[in-house]
Image (tube, rainbow, N blue to C red):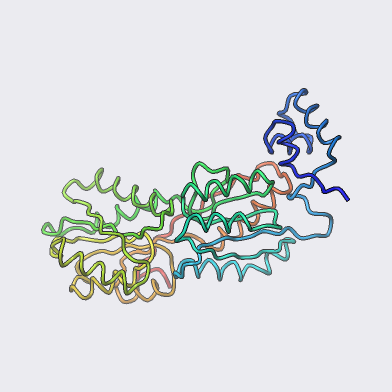
Length: 343
């Protein structure tokens, strides 16, 4: 029995893109008559292609959420939210599966991402690196819809990114900590992060540096070396940095853009700085809730995880159904949580 051709097969033989084939098959405007004729000629020769975005009547849409395998409170929170949304997904005729892939090796991550098959769409949180871009592009060419979640992979063929404006989040952190820096002797804001290559963290760093330079001329920003993602490692690394490379009496605040905030708070407490400096971090996890209560964190910048997870599924389904305006997504707001308002 001959195999059913894919949209990518039709596109390759017709000399057009997969999006053009999709438009022709679904009789949408925007394709000239000559191209339509060429595509339909190939369809006549090979047969009607299987369209991953259109399951047969009665079947569920099958979507995959792909996250880094590294353990972190934020990633575990996202994983739990996906699991807790299972009932909502079933009601929308969606079957979801979650894949956790080791992101420390980009080539391996890309190879495993390429093997995520038998699904119509993928919601992806991944480093912004060339091998991963190529894997995304190949998935899209094969007819799988891909959206990025929380952190974008710029330059890839992904169809949209769902999550808060990370550069605005970094600027917000800079504004909050800059306004807290009232002690004239404390003129240094620290910026700490991990070597994850997530574009979300890169954008946050850029936004933070911009607002400090633009609005707080007396303050200087100093980046710490990349901190380990685990709390013990982050604590030890920051302690070494404060001992060897900077005068702790000049620190006015610290913005930690990624994981390890418990370790950062522990290092500051060990140096007697908890009540003297502002600390901002991201994502309202159980650990950050405890730190807010104990004044180990001044601010937590948070976005609605449930909204992002469920919106990813809604967008993927709309793309599969060729719904007009499928990519018109409202960005979640950045919430500023403090010890007084997080309860």
